[in-house]
Image 1: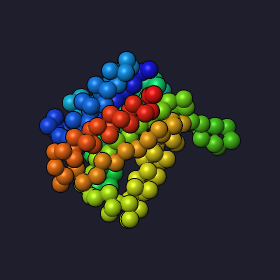
Image 2: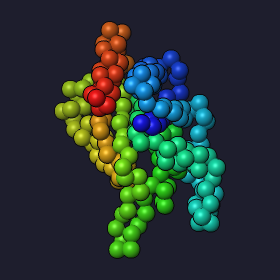
Image 3: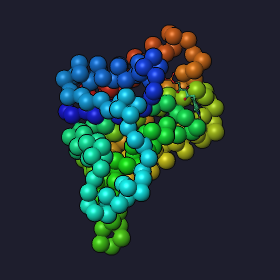
Image 4: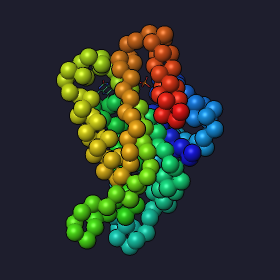
Length: 195
Ligand SMILES: Cc1cc2nc3c(=O)[nH]c(=O)nc-3n(C[C@H](O)[C@H](O)[C@H](O)COP(=O)(O)O)c2cc1C
């Protein structure tokens, strides 16, 4: 299968980068085609601008958006890896969604005013590390809130099936052994999803 990894972390020495490497190698070991879009390395411009809207109105696409849409069109599975920053995605990833999941590509309005989901048939897997404890985020309802705004509000909105949303917790404070076991869990999840 064709897997696209969309990755949003600026630090190549981060735990998120270790997750990226784990996911990339596990998918390649399973024989999948894998492409990585490392948004910081690409210096992806996350600002949906007046020029973008003007281009959309003329049925044109800015070249960077067109390129990312080609990768999404190619992919059957999309893995999105990012840290939770202020209860959601880093701005660069949110801006990638703003610009790349555009009207006419990811969704459009049908004749009855209904939403047509244009990315049906694709599946998404989300991995979001965070610093808070699992207990704190479970009790406060943060997991439900984040799943609502990302899984339901973005990926399912455009027709993708969200296979799983994994939230490695307390990653800023746990020891190396715990981090290694989180990487094994990520590998295990991919084995189960693609068994
Ligand atoms: C700008 C910023 C905002 C953050 N906001 C949150 C937050 O809302 N909730 C949380 O649990 N952790 C938060 N964190 C902690 C990050 O989620 C944590 O540092 C990251 O997941 C660790 O992974 P890394 O080592 O790959 O960066 C924040 C960190 C930064 C830098």
